[in-house]
Length: 353
Image (cartoon, rainbow, N blue to C red):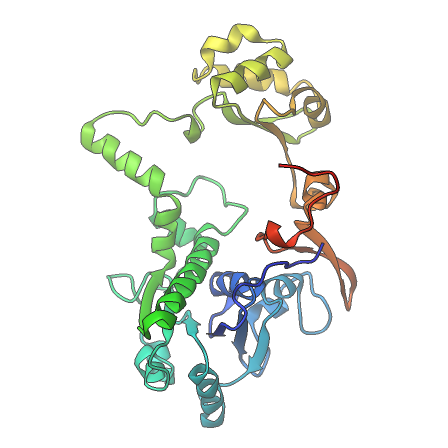
């Protein structure tokens, strides 16, 4: 299985002035879908992701190999006229530009929307910033924790994944694809103001509007998804590993309890006091024991894997969601493109509708 098997964006060109994960995530998706992405990097050192650990070779890293795969690296110092002329020539033939500077910086460097639209009138230009091009925090520095915190979505521990950054990158890719489709139709340019703080709100939109409605209506939010129900919970096993129980529908809850031998708990599906009792049972055996007993098609129970575990998961491997590739450091794993065009994959022998 290859990393990419569907390239509908062949013929679309994007110039990427962003740094690190947010913009990199968006242009990774575009490159995976076939777009030509010119990644503008500083001549000394390149993008910051090159220097993260674990390193892969002299000037790359595992994150850089993933985030910037399939892109064309262009080393350019935007404060030098010759380099600025080079990137402007790339923009002249491009469909879209994405930048992640604080408001006003791109214009000062000569690559603002009006500068580049003057040489490419149908340009789609995405400004992906922390807090947007306007508002009291527009010039404020920030990172993922700040954006998620302002959205009211941050718990008491640091999340394992970058929520606002990755969501913002995905939304940026969507904005570019949408804008290019319109521009190719009627030549309409676009300057999209997309902030990571707004992306965090969009990610948690359901929770935010429920909480605000509950306050206005003076009622409680009733949902099993907020960690207050035993049927939607993470439980620690005897070996320190965890089990994810997401048996929201009554039939899944009933089947889980049948396998657990605790059918007397059926009517306590949303009783918060059951969480500790359920947890005490799960804590008596290691994760592998509960996987063997509880993980089946109709329980919505699964093991909680560490990132290092996913390369041994049969489902992930069979789908080709994770693939090995040859690097200067030897064989390494890559997460494949999530897009699969089944029309291009031969049907299995004997398959019928």
